[in-house]
Image 1 (cartoon, rainbow, N blue to C red):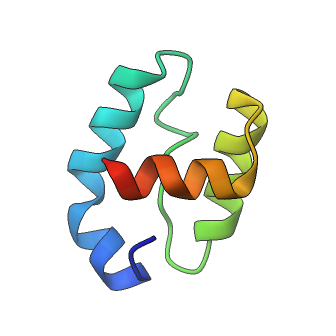
Image 2 (image 1 turned 30 degrees about the horizontal axis):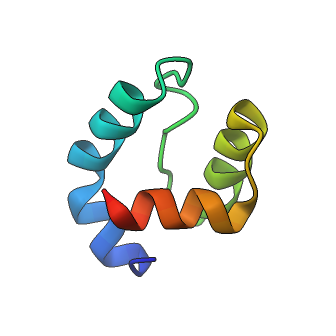
Image 3 (image 1 turned 90 degrees about the vertical axis):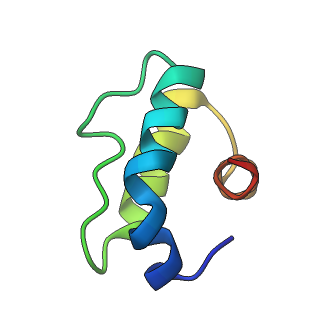
Length: 62
């Protein structure tokens, strides 16, 4: 998975693609706040029922 700086720079594009791929995700689910990347991944993880590793892989592939 990208580091925090790379992720933040591309995040608008990534979150749009995540929301297209997984329609049940909301803006709040994919809100990336500095220092809260793990919390965001946890919210997505709960919503999609996938492991942390699966979520990180999905984000990396986008």
